[in-house]
Length: 315
Image (tube, rainbow, N blue to C red; front, side):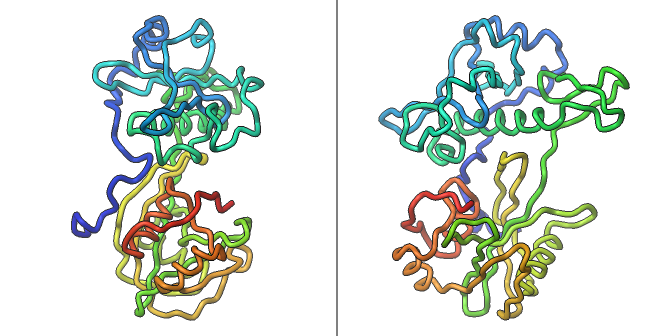
């Protein structure tokens, strides 16, 4: 493990803000009781958006008491904060009330990508967990064994097949993301196919079955740019519910600098010194990931401080 001061602190979306109280989830009466209690704090998700307001400290997630329609919606027990129960509710029936073109400056419904870096720890954790669970539920409505419909159980934390009784648990896809640095202390950034023009990021990829994390880092770098690496070092991790990933951040030392791009995945890749990157970001020829992402934090960890860069989505 790296020294404590080498690990990325305060990654967006990563605070353990809730006591998840997994011991309460098996109680079939838990959600009905909570949704009948005005003291329960409810976060409503519509599609991939939640309601947000701005106050003096920045954006704040709108939470409130349950309403009469919530018992008929998909409800997800999030846990407790200071002995107060929180529930995420998937209110897709309100879809027509949420404009499709809500922008990042609108005092209305926003995506986690838009506001996640600026929410307080509880708001970010509530939004992240609700979105991750909702994405999983939406994609797993049928049993993979028999094809019959499944139903939510354990307060929203599993789905159960009524036909064969099988239990199905939320999926989290592990992905490694790595800042590769060469002998001259240059960082490797790449533009994946589908990235917006100028968008560049560190390399990333999913962990394969039977593979260690360090092996996944080495394989992905080798496959995507043809570079061998060593000294793979963990720096931090971040839940990334787009739709259901966990990003595991690393640094790695490049053993060479010749690049052979995996054409179907990588459109462009370059080595950057700090001065190269500063100039490219300043003149707009390179766009880096937004502040919400561990990708940005890995680049800034190498850079030595924050980058003065606009908030953009690379894809």
